[in-house]
Image 1 (cartoon, helix red, strand yellow):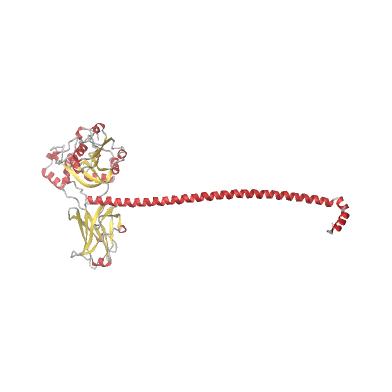
Image 2 (image 1 turned 90 degrees about the vertical axis):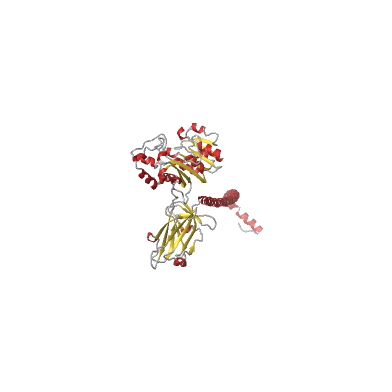
Length: 498
């Protein structure tokens, strides 16, 4: 954004400061795009200390000059309206950093929609954004004030203001999904407001407010996002001191008393952590007397995201397994979701595309009949994002390989059809030549017939003329006078009488 000295700072490790925390999140030897790089504080640090390759974007030409020679490439762009991807069309980044930027934009969607095209499929886009819901600014407003300042939460150059939920929704609207949440924590007295606000409210009341909502001390959000959803996301900033949120699952069943899936025969469970990266959810069947289960439906999540389902089983009241998922990934049994392959014998990735995905689990009659009032469905999930990312990339590679094979097959078929087409065209050309020869011969025959017809007509005319002349001879006086002589001559010759 605009180059001003108030945005320049030195990166120091292990402190509550946004660029320092962002630098910690970037792996060594990564390729990084620094959006709103200013004079290059972040890039210079990760190039010198982590061996990264860094490109930068900013609106201020004077600031960009300070990025050299640490940055590989820097460009001048107005992030509110300029097209960004063409300047980095040949690049794909491990990390894109958008630090203290989107609060300065009238329409952040122009920038956010382009980031998906620049980050690698498994890459990370890191944002740092001021928290307008920090207790200091809330107290300011409770006192009837909303005064802009030279820096801080109500910086005079800020156009947009974000709470945590509002920020997450803004990013998701552009297809950027939260994978990790962190924050820069500041007590009220550490902010630009000092103790001017706290002195006006009872300390016990302020302490109770912070205890109830520890995130009220989050001065800046630091969100790590990817271009696909993930399970078990840490949606509470680490510095806020709250545990990662869990998620709910739901179990439906049909029976002789409830022939269709409905809210009457539904059980909701909260998944709880079993190990460092695993959650387990247990849903107990609450059956009436004489009720017998027929089918079950399992709703793992209630939002579009990808989760790793590792194990699914039904246990009886004595905790013995009566049915276990054989890890068959049958998409025909899913609604609003599809399966992606995971490790062999370790379940599958449940890829939800709706807010109401479900899995219809088919049970044979014997197993269904063994489910009683103490039975329960147990499901093991994983939030190992690195594994999930690897599975998604592997599935994408497999799908790409399939598509490439299909394209190659289509190309081969097309080549074969082209060869056949060329052969047919040659046959057509040959036939056209034969037809042309036949037409020439036909024209020759027609000309000959025409000549013969003309000769016939000429001969016929000559015959008619001869006949006319002969008739004149027969009618002439000389013919009648010489008749006796012709008789005598014919008699002497033995011929017919004239």
